[in-house]
Each structure stands twice: as C-alpha cells, then as structure tokens.
Image 1 (cartoon, rainbow, N blue to C red):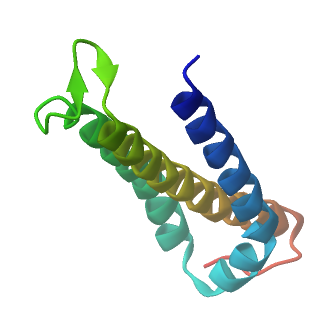
Image 2: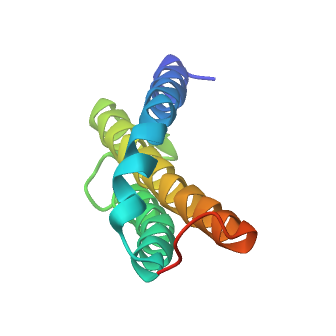
Length: 115
C-alpha cells in the first residue's frame, strides 16, 4: 500500500472517530427538528456523501491527477479531501438517523413526544 493511501486512510478513520465522539451533542441539537427533517436529512446526507465521493474520484483522471492507473500528488490531496467530506456527511447522517430511531423508540414506549 502506498504511503499516501495509508495517510488518507488514517486521516479518514481519525476524523470519523473525532466526529462520532461529538455526535451526542449533535443528536441533542437535532431533537428540535421534525421527524421528517431527521429522516430526509439523514437519508439525503448518505446519498450526498456518496455522490461527492464518487464524483470526486471520477474527476481525478479528467483533471490530470491520475495517469496510468496511479494518482499524482495532487490526486492524493483531492482524494483525501473528498474522503474527509464523505466521512463528514456519513457521520452527520448517522447522527440524524440515530436521533430519529431514539425518538421512535421513546414514542413507542410513550416517554417522548412524537412530531
């Protein structure tokens, strides 16, 4: 595995772990959102993150950042940034979905309001 790929992987995992540690605060903040907003926002971010990732990676060759199946240094930077955007969107989406699931569980038990 090339060193830049390992560096990107470590950065993505570390960033995801940092964001997930903050997700309880996000879930507390999104409690005021409607159930629809949580569901649509979470689902939308899952797809948006995937679109950003795939679009960014697909743009490497046309931008001249990938040649002969290998990434140029600028390609690694773009791949790293696109990967971080993907991780961010996925973690925020999961935080929204977890808040929605918790709200559904509370409503089923009768201990929380359902919007």
